[in-house]
Length: 430
Ligand SMILES: CC(=O)N[C@H]1[C@@H](OP(=O)(O)OP(=O)(O)OC[C@H]2O[C@@H](n3ccc(=O)[nH]c3=O)[C@H](O)[C@@H]2O)O[C@H](CO)[C@@H](O)[C@@H]1O
Ligand SMILES: C=C(OP(=O)(O)O)C(=O)O
Image 1 (cartoon, rainbow, N blue to C red):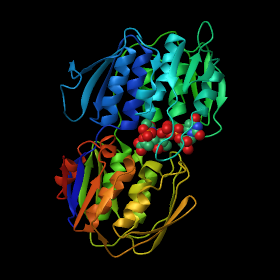
Image 2: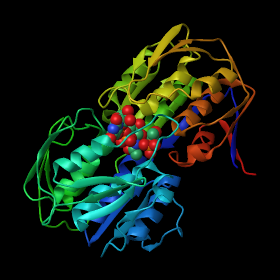
Image 3: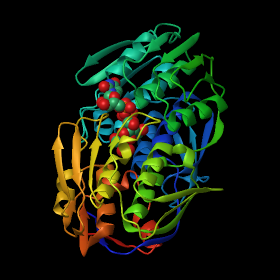
Image 4: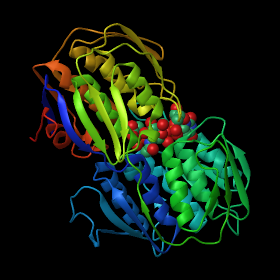
């Protein structure tokens, strides 16, 4: 199993190219199930989750060609990938595959809308929380589907003649349930109005792509999304939006290590709350034509309290990275996690590096320390793993992060991007 070795102490200086967003690419790829034409996606990141989803979609009948070539012949940044699902050959999403990647459960929306029925494994819990699917079940039931749970699977069936547009307000904001309801409603008869919808930029990106495919969606990016059903969707060409979590992660890495880095192919408007928080912590951030410049020279890191929230709040996917930064602040800060009940697995690993963190319910209290010391640590989930890399950049001596496969789910060529900016970060393959 690969490990990442970091020798701390170097500033970061240079340019980092931000990849396409994992959390946009996944639902966009799944949208290819809604049409028999070709959906072409540009700026698709090269990540373990993307590769796995290609295989899963292949099982349902999607033909995948990368830059005009067959899957897995290409290994470059910003790939263009063509997805064509002439016919759906299998409406079952197996436990074996759904359990490997939660977002693959989202095929339930397109399969139900296009084929009228499907059997999809329940995804189960994961390291960061239980992550139930009740909101998906309620939302699709509102569109007229019958949803039965049988032996760990959901058997979903649309009424004869297909799903029926409806008004439905989610009792809680869910990104995944909003994606699924929006995709399913594009092919429903009549109009669907989703209340308390997720407002994340990835929801807007999916809506833009679906509209390019002929859907009639308005209001994406607000709490109320309206979808007028159409009888069929066509192909389209769409560019995956920049990864705001990767952007925020590197901005935090610069705030932690010091230096001056330009983040290219991204946009400050995707993460204003996180950037404002970083400014308060002492980073100097300015927008550029094609991204942003992040600097921290000389001044120390100031303590700042955060509470995670759905967009436009502080993203839970940047919580672990921000906590890593706060371990070196000049005072006491608090991090409150409101989205996932168990997203503090990085606390005990940061403690191995000398961080002083105490947990009380959903809040972590971080007492900044003068120095961290390198140590062997273990990644427990995707964002927790990168928080350990950030801490390692500022720790004295050597840090090794094991279970790097978590990192490979969501960060494209992390060690290459950091090394180019002067960090000592190296993958050790065994
Ligand atoms: C692939 C992808 O885009 N993943 C992102 C997506 O995950 P995901 O879409 O799974 O997260 P949700 O927005 O659905 O989860 C938000 C909260 O709602 C709860 N919930 C969700 C569905 C449901 O049926 N019932 C229920 O109770 C969850 O357990 C969680 O407590 O949004 C999360 C919140 O921004 C991010 O951390 C993930 O990176
Ligand atoms: C939690 C995440 O992803 P997923 O929803 O795929 O588990 C994440 O991207 O941080």
